Length: 395
Ligand SMILES: Cc1cc2nc3c(=O)[nH]c(=O)nc-3n(C[C@H](O)[C@H](O)[C@H](O)COP(=O)(O)OP(=O)(O)OC[C@H]3O[C@@H](n4cnc5c(N)ncnc54)[C@H](O)[C@@H]3O)c2cc1C
Image 1: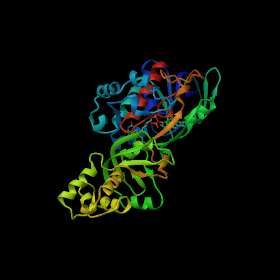
Image 2: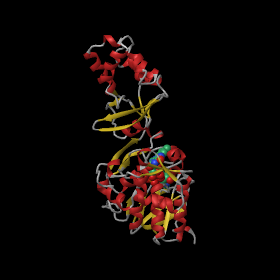
Image 3: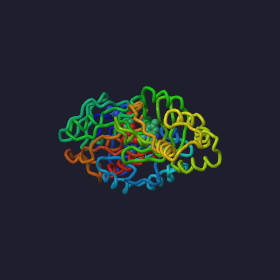
Image 4: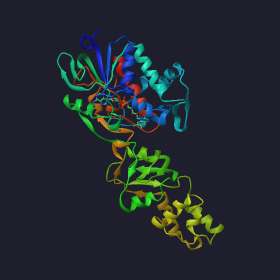
């Protein structure tokens, strides 16, 4: 049947993680689904995720792993299609997986296994998938009528699964925000999340000299903290600890780093004073840090001194500096490298049970387009699966 005349129950815009899950679920339930995407291929972010192995969920997923203006919003969808449910699906398709630290689950072989599984489910649900399709206009009459470069399509239900703004090179667009604006839905202003932080001037030059060094730290911004690895880079700071805190950091704010989360450094210096009084602090610190970092800290952050000469006050000052290193990023690497977009369609506008817009029946938003942003570790995909599933069950 020509595309133009085929009738659909629902049109989904965006064949990424959330759109594919939603299409598969609704299609399997017998709904006639059209899944559109402007890219030439579906699920591009799935393929590059987790270094090509897709960290597809996290076994400890809970609402605490998400940022949102309403931290309770994600609970219902996460409970109705949980990390365990997605893992069951993965196992039912015979996909090998393994667990890394903090409950992160990855494909054993390739992220393609996850994409193939979702594409297979869409085929089983007889989903009509149209790639290279750009939506030029959405009109709401009795149904939603879409004008695209490949003809006009209409359906009573329209699902926006076009993701966030991160990595424009991979096809990210502000489409979801524009649709929200068209239908007068509030948004939480978007900003890059899970992104390296950058510095300027002397701080940038100093951090550059440490590029390549990685260490376990606790990083804090306002009331939130993460214990993970930090990586010094040519542009500033990266590594899981920084990516995590970047989602909470706002321009102008300081971040605070505990460089020795396991060590009472004041007590350690006192021990060193007994064991090696003639040694310098920088030499002693090189037993705890890479030498380059120890030397940098003793020029930029603390005063180097012979251990035996250090008085209680200086020890205290040194300990405070190493446990609370405060830095002010000038920005982040932005959407060019951000793994996610923080913000999106305001959850107050949507029903938490099916993701439908309260003011505009028949219009739904799922996945990263919604103001629900996961921490690093498989949570963003779990939100895409859970919100896509909740919506797919309601169509
Ligand atoms: C490098 C990288 C690695 C990541 N690794 C992980 C990981 O291991 N684990 C994890 O949980 N999360 C990871 N993420 C985050 C995760 O990929 C996203 O949160 C998730 O893909 C969001 O799903 P989505 O379906 O909402 O959006 P997307 O997957 O981004 O899909 C949106 C789709 O909409 C299409 N689209 C956009 N605009 C339009 C338009 N105007 N018209 C038509 N179609 C449009 C796009 O082409 C795309 O196919 C990673 C992200 C990146 C960038």
